[in-house]
Every structure is written in structure tokens, then in C-alpha cells.
Image (cartoon, rainbow, N blue to C red; front, top):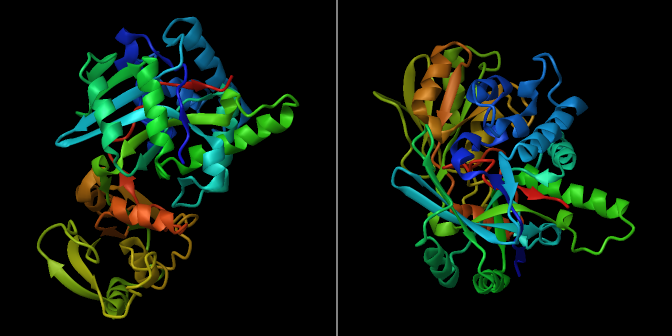
Length: 413
């Protein structure tokens, strides 16, 4: 059963919330982070991407970067940019993007649940990215960015959250991308206990976005437990920051692919090889796949629709029959030579929020030779695979809207 606990959040002074809030650290590079934080001394990027305050030539994974993040967090606390609530509580975080609304409960989840499998994973982590998050969390002594989890919708939980959101929110603002953000707190002990009890009846939580942060939180706990001869299991480092959304409010967009070259082939030879595994149909406009097992391909200024040929994948294999697997196993690996998409530097992944226009742009720029658009993985697929302890191919899901960082932080002691 899922264990959750309230916590004393560190969060922005109300009038600074909009300026503090920032996109997650991993959806931008350093140059983009510098631009986003320009002229904003209280942007959370000074904590989540602290290299922006150091010389440009610095290694972003070097110790001074992690120390700078800790220094900036302490500075924000000392100057009153961030304040800590005096009592433990839950929080409700609502986002609206166009016709999409998702409302999640902000909690601390248990490392034990992550390690024993009550919290289900669906992706492998990269060792370098996981190590980076371990050093970052440990240096900050805080979970500064939440993990994004989901669960099968529960009517009692929804009713309690709906009750909370009838009150005026602590924060309510709209960011430059048109996404609105609102936050409420739940300090009433009866409501807190009710939610804790309701989640105790939820058998499984699922990682939607944040595998590296989850794994890092687990490792930090183990490091601190092993270094603490008086460890009891109740210390704050045994828990980590999470926002949990019901599955019926989750929105997954496609995670598209672009590849730098044709693996030594000319266009004609490449197209012939693609035609061995797919029906290739030229189309007049961009291809936004409208159903499973349909793909778009952009090359040489033209779009093509790709349909996998019969027997090109096993229908009864839940992983191999995923669209990301079909593309990988029938085209990216055998034709383009992208054997390991987790490490191959020739492939790049483009979140669906950027649209097929971004695929056209990067190919037309000459930086990449070919792009592929996909139909998004469903939340049902994700949970079914996780329930079987199966692992999806890398970059199978792109969730929107992205959680803003800086609105709530969990200190580890």
C-alpha cells in the first residue's frame, strides 16, 4: 500500500511566487537556463541550474556547481525569498494548459515504497544523470524539484481535493507559456489524516516523470542511513518530494526523434531500406499520427507516412508492440545504426509540445537529416507495463504540462 506523509514545505513569499517558479532543470540546457533567468535574481534556476552563476567554462558536474546551488538556497532563505511552513501539511497543485487541467497532491513519498516496488518504474536511468542528481540533492540537503507520479483515480481522494480547492489558493498565476498554476495547502489535521488513510488503500503509485530524481532520492537515503548510527527510519531523508496526479487527468504527448545522418547511405538507398519494413506513402503536409502504429517521416523537405508491414513486430509483446519499439527495432537500429538510443549521440529526442514544426526546422537547418513523428504512448500502456515490471524504451513519454520548480521544497532534516 502507498505510504505518503505531510511535510513543512519551503516555498516562496506569495508576491514572489511567479518570479521564483521555473521549468524543471532537465528540459533546458545551460544556455537556455541563462536566458530564462536573465534579469531575475530570484528565479529558481539559480538553485536548480546553479552553473548559470559561475564562469561559462565550468564543468556543470563539478563540485563548485553543487556548492553554488546550496549557497543560493541558503541565500534565498536568509533573504526571505523562501520561507518554511511551521507545521506539516499537504498541498494541492493545479495546472491548466488550454483545455487540459491536472490537479495533484503534493506529498512526501517513502523511499521504502520505491525500493520495494510499491512505486512502479517504467524506464531505466542513466548512471551519469543519476549521479548528478545524487550530488545535487545531497549538497542542497533538500529535494528541490518534485517527482511526477500517477495513480488510478480514486473518488474519495478526488472529493477531498475538490473540497480543498474551493478555498482561495496560496498562489495563482499564469506563466509566459500560457500555463496557469495554483497552489493550496491542507493544514487541517482531519483532512491530512483522511488523505493519508485513503492513499494507504492505493496499491501502487507509478513514476510518470522523474526516474532519475526518484533513484537519486533512494541513494541519498541509503548514504545518510549508513552514515547515521542513530538512524530510526523516520528521518526526513527517508522521504522525497512528489506530486501525485490521478491517471484520468494525465496528458502524454509524443516523444519524436531526429537523426543526424543516414548511416552512410544516400537518400535513395535509405528510402529503399525503409520500404522493406514499412509502407511508405508521400503526403502533402506534416504527419501528426492519429493512431497507434502510424508514423511520420520528414526528409529532404518532404513528409511521408509510414505504416509497419505485417509481421514486422510481435503483436502479443506489450513492449515490442509499442510504437517507439517498432520504430527502433525496424528502422532506427537496423537502417540508421542507432543501436542504443540512450547513449548514441546521433539521435535527439523532441518533446511533442514543440510540434512537428520543430522537426521540420531542425532537418531544414541541416543539423539533422531525418525526423520521425509518433503517436503518443497512453497512460494505460504505461501502467500496464509497469505492473508487469517491464521497462519501456527510453524517451517513450512526454508529459505536459511540466511541473514548475520552486513552489515547494522538502528539506532532508
